[in-house]
Image (cartoon, rainbow, N blue to C red; front, top):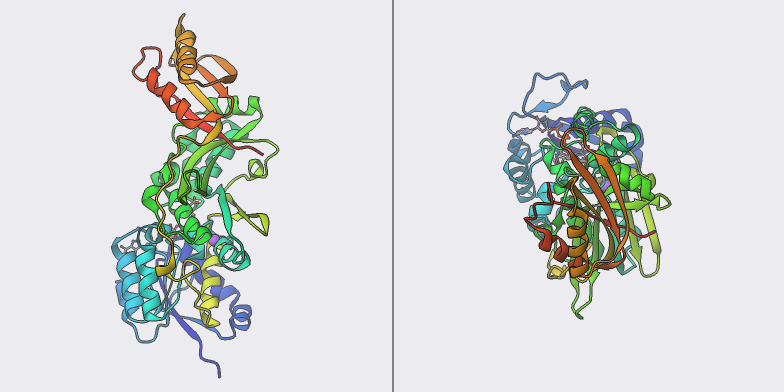
Length: 435
Ligand SMILES: NC(=O)C1=CN([C@@H]2O[C@H](COP(=O)(O)OP(=O)(O)OC[C@H]3O[C@@H](n4cnc5c(N)ncnc54)[C@H](O)[C@@H]3O)[C@@H](O)[C@H]2O)C=CC1
Ligand SMILES: N[C@@H](CC=O)C(=O)O
Ligand code: NA
């Protein structure tokens, strides 16, 4: 008789109930693939009485998630509570400290404490796995750390937040309002408990920092991700972008910058203009897509559901199956102590074409002032669109696309314009990704 792998589940929300449902539905198939049954020994969440649409009566209940780590009948703790610190971190440290494997969907915790947890797991000789934490159901961590293991990865980028992608692509298709679409994404279970993590790009930054560490073998640096979200993107930007041949997508982008001869880590989350014929332009809804470029494999594109109960549960259970098979692996694809410390890259020298949107009062001289600032900063304008007056604010939306040039020149032009009476609101800059 093969011994089951005994697991404990902390957190029974979107992801946790998805995991219960998946383990129950595919129990037989999972046992064959894992070469032993997976048995849920105990569960924990905030509210025992809540109807979650799954029968939890056959599992032991713990009010305090930390108690799961102390149970002698548990081999692996699965953390699906969320939050970078608090009960999730206490549970993760407790589980590893007690010699149990840890599976987590929690990118915030891994982005902040992943190195500490990886080191503790190595010392304890247990597995630490977090496939669900990056791009939900897409096996991108496995893809990079196993499938692409032989390559020097040069660049990794993509759509890493399902909520933002759902908002942008729905606004694009329907013209609906930002707040209204965000509420819908929350109802569908895509958004974080605090949706500002989604819309301000923080969630994508968590994921990007994890991906970069795995892709480049660099020490994880969440603090060094330049982060801008989508809260300032207006329906008018989506319209202007469309008329210029682009869609707007929130992209995370990371590469090794060797401009000054030293390897430095470039990490940025920012809304971008993506040309219609680029593969990322067709990634809609809560779908994520990650592109990785390696020196022998070329370009790989991973695409699939980045959020939601089923896909995220699929990634969590895949990690559990790995552990049941005895595969420990290294959390960041190599031992924590061997990850290379890299300083953040300077970004001003990066060359790109930019979209710049101004909201300006409709009066003479405004355009001249803006173009003079561009000229003085050395920014060359490729095209410009002026949209009629906004009925509510009386402002005119002026959108420009620049020729390729250093990002520092655009920053300088906006510095010259800073405080000008001609600018009703701070201009919005988005880089254009090339095909
Ligand atoms: N929803 C999604 O599509 C995805 C979520 N994730 C991550 O998975 C984790 C869980 O996310 P969701 O299931 O969406 O969250 P949720 O809010 O639906 O569920 C959280 C669960 O944790 C429990 N919980 C929260 N605070 C607690 C506390 N102090 N003590 C005990 N239990 C507590 C709640 O009762 C609830 O059962 C988060 O780290 C999230 O970032 C990762 C990928 C996708
Ligand atoms: N809130 C996240 C959930 C998955 O990681 C998202 O919207 O992508
Ligand atoms: Na994943």
